[in-house]
Length: 296
Image (tube, rainbow, N blue to C red; front, top):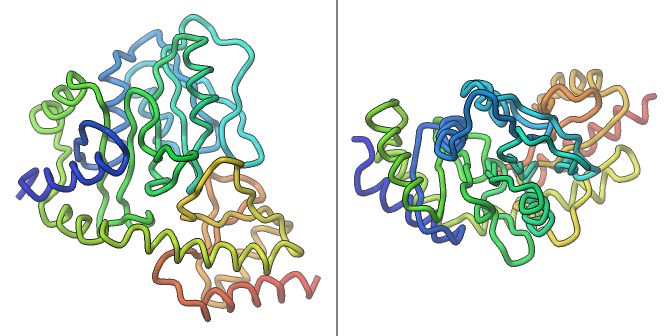
């Protein structure tokens, strides 16, 4: 069954967590971003600001609507930098909360207000994170997230949600997901997510302990990630910068350790980090990384 009471219940739970009036469950975060852009009227001739270091869904949905992405650099936290000038064709900015950290809400709001831009927040990797006391998912006119298996609040298949305080946007997206597109969430998925939702704070706390362990044990070996001041992450990713990245990845694979290259960057590598990861397994990861560099 699609979009039944279980889905409605989960929509409300996540909306409440993020301080939003409405949540609309859809087939993926990619779909949510498309609906968000369409709902604010992005189309041919428009431009949308988006960080260059992000998953492709953050920008290819802009192109799908006939608009043009304008790519921004990112800072030491992998979060977007703001340009000094913005052309009149730029209609919106997609603020991406990356690797479990939120963007600086105050700076994004100030920048968007100055240039008359609509903010869409992509918090696919930041459910459960905060900017100060403000939860990820509460920024801008619309926010979008994911429940893919790699996320801290995950299902067994792809899924997403669009959140907003705007009733007109909510009504449009509910219509589009059912009538114009096949982008709905099953009740079975919603029930799994509602069950896991009860343990979200536990997941965040546990991930944080593993994150801190990695940081303490690897800071003298590789370039470890930094936390933006004012942000309370959900600790969903531990992404290092390192020399001989590809050889390290292959070495760890041979040792049975799965890693991931994030967005084809030349020197970053994402280490295993999830609530089911055991302490002994995290210790094994650290030992093998140290072993790799001690040999060189």
